[in-house]
Image 1 (cartoon, rainbow, N blue to C red):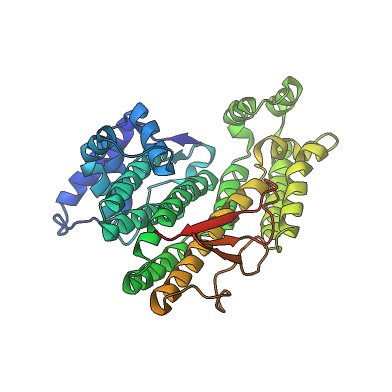
Image 2 (tube, helix red, strand yellow; image 1 turned 120 degrees about the vertical axis):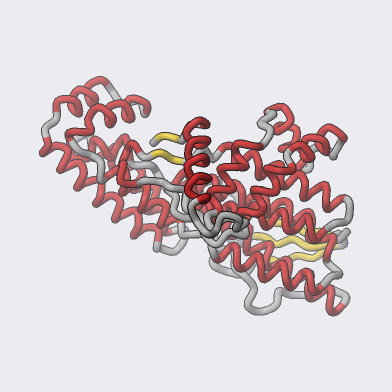
Length: 389
């Protein structure tokens, strides 16, 4: 798969602008399609990579703000506005033509990830200045961009969306303690977080579309492009020869095997965790093992992605959302009663790794929400600390 070049994005925006002049909605803003604004932001932001590295350290909390960071954020005011305004658009159509199969052109997501970091840098600056409403709005704009990127995309789109969601939730975790005594703002934020997290498409949707794009294009007439792709994945010379000399029957059999593999992967995604993880790990290894004796599995062995880690990343991001939602409920109880509850209230969002409530532990600094089961891909149990300011 390919990404759109800067020149092609510029041309596309020009065409969109001309078409807009022929419609009654000439002065409508923001446009109905959020992708227009995301593409514009990608063209207008200052891609200063040393500064982006510094901004990354700032939003992680590794360094404090300084005049250089503040000046860089100000220089990107237009791109920030376009990025934030995109969240108000009712839909996001990236113009991806999946009928192109393996030649499908995907948007360049790296600029959007960079702009998200700049938006979160402004959120931290606004928070430190006491403008918490602005700071929270900026965090939510990054969450909305994550939903827009994941919606209608493939696995890479979903992974970018997860990255944005994780960055925004880390920023929210830093900001929420500052508004702990504002129940109206906590209620509004809780509702918005619920709406955003509920709008994230299932990881199954991304896996299904991604593998269908690959699997549907495993045809003899596409052998040149297939060889180009499998060479990038480090296929042996012998297997490259087999593919190069293969007839249509070989490709039909490989396509059928590939689509059967996809069906098994999607079924495994519906199992409870950790059964799902165990099954996905086995499925990730299966094509390579079978291809040693079964030529029908050769293309799946090099083209089918192992999705066990992808599913775990998705689960981690959704669990983080649930931790933020649970924390907001706890802060709300404290704002209304003057103290934290001794135990979690009923009906709180769950730790998705265990399917149970988070472990809840109070201390003098605030509280910790801890998962009750590990992320098996990383052999790690996640915990989320929320403090009082």
